[in-house]
Every structure is written in structure tokens, then in C-alpha cells.
Length: 137
Image (cartoon, rainbow, N blue to C red; front, side, top):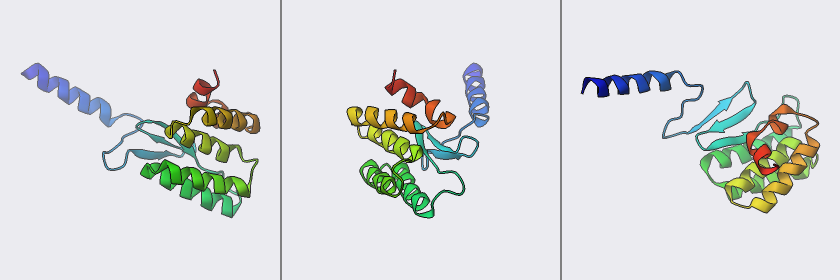
């Protein structure tokens, strides 16, 4: 019994120092060093850098909010609206791709991940994304 208690204390200690802590109520956390949302299920959408078009930022934030709620269909619609504001935004295209992945639209996700990579100009948040790399292997 003592070993079992020690084991649980150890687990609590380890998880209290993990990089991300997720609660059951909100499994999402914004990682400002990476400029992206991480979540218990994997990668999440990226936020736009400071100085971006205000309408683009507004639409992207709406998409992120819906993604976090788990309403991926509406999130995709918001990201598609943002794309109309700036069709060359690698971040918006990447966010669409992540959302398409969550909707199990694999073929569409592959196309969007490739487009995001092509537009990224070497941005490590996009080209270094594990999900993008997995899709484009």
C-alpha cells in the first residue's frame, strides 16, 4: 500500500511540472513562446503575429474560439472567411488544414497543409509542425 501511495505522489509531482497542464473544463492552453494553441489532442491553430490586418485577426480569433469549443465545422467557416481577407496567409491556410484534420477530411487537409507549407516562407511554426510533417511525408 505504501508503494502505491508513493507512486501516486510521484505522478502528481511529475504532472505538476509538465509544460502543459490541461483541465477537464478547458484542455487548451495558449503557448505564447510558440504563438499557437496546444491541446490535449495535439496541435491547434496558430494566432497571427502583431501588426496583422485587424479583420484577419478578428476572423482568425473567431475560428480559434470555435476550434477550442470543438465546433470544427463553424471554425472552418471562420477560417475560410479569414482566407477571403488574405488568401496568401500561410497561418490561415494552416488553421484550415488543422481543422480539416479534425473533421477527418484527409484529402482536403493534405492540400491545405501543402499550400500552407508553400506559403510559409520557412516559418518554423508551420514547416516544423509535426502534424504537417506527418501529412506531407
